Each structure stands twice: as C-alpha cells, then as structure tokens.
Image 1 (cartoon, helix red, strand yellow):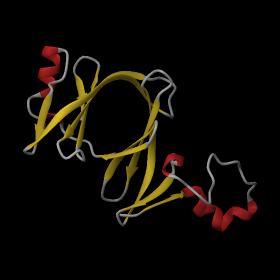
Image 2 (tube, one colour):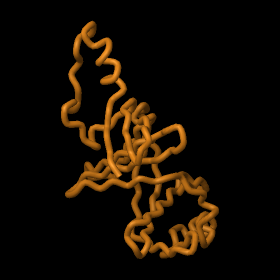
Image 3 (cartoon, helix red, strand yellow):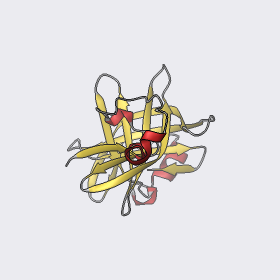
Image 4 (cartoon, one colour):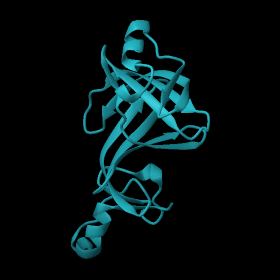
Length: 173
C-alpha cells in the first residue's frame, strides 16, 4: 500500500500560481510528511484519493497532544489518528456501532463507572490496554469537550477498538 500526500492549493498553484503572492507554509512542499496534514490536503491511499475534511486535537494533559484527521473519498470515510511521542504511531479507523460490541459496553460502563477488562466483536477478543481522560476539539473551534477513552487491543496486536464516553450516556467506538 502506498501513500501520497498532496495539497489542494498545490494543484491550483500549478495553473494560477504565477499571479499569486506565495504564502509561507508550515511544511516543506518538496517533502510532505503525514504529520503535515491539514484540512484541504489530498491523500492517496490504497489506490483511492481522500480529502482531509476535518482536523481534531486531543489534549491528554502534561503538554501531550495528538491529532486526528477525517479522510473522505467517494467510497469510504476513515479517521487517521497521529501520535508523535517517542515514535510515530498511526491508527487508521472507521466508526463502529457501540451496540455491536459484547458485553453491552454502554450499560456496563454506566453501571460500573469503568469499562470491562475485555470485550469481543465478530468472534475476536480485545483486552483493555489503556484508560485516559482528555479534551477533544475540532481545530476550527476554540472550545474543548472532556471525554474518557478506553483502548482495547486484540491478541494479534493489529486490531484496536477505542471506546469513548462523552458525558453520562453518550458513547462512540
């Protein structure tokens, strides 16, 4: 699978660029990296072109921030989560119906005020690896929302389910 990142502005600059004053960029246009993504960029992945339509910031405290990008193509929508701590970690995910997860995670968390140690989906068992409280915002906005996140990883180490709780009874996976 290959990855190619382009910016929408770069395409327009090829045709109309000689009439415009060049603006300062936050990245080197000859060496665009995945960490340079912003709204409006185009990303080619698995023979399909995706546009970055939204950018989200996660604030985990202690000056620890991660970013998530909504990638939309004609056929698919993905969320790309980027974490740069010691190593670069990328997680590509799709929204999942919380009701498909066993046990009934919403009821379990509401009753026990914590997530179960393991969950299952489609015959695969996932084990809780992490629980975090953080703040989340669309970078278009100034206001953040507090949430709790639980990360579950399958035995193979490649499949991940993240469950997020927003307020008392709102959940996403």
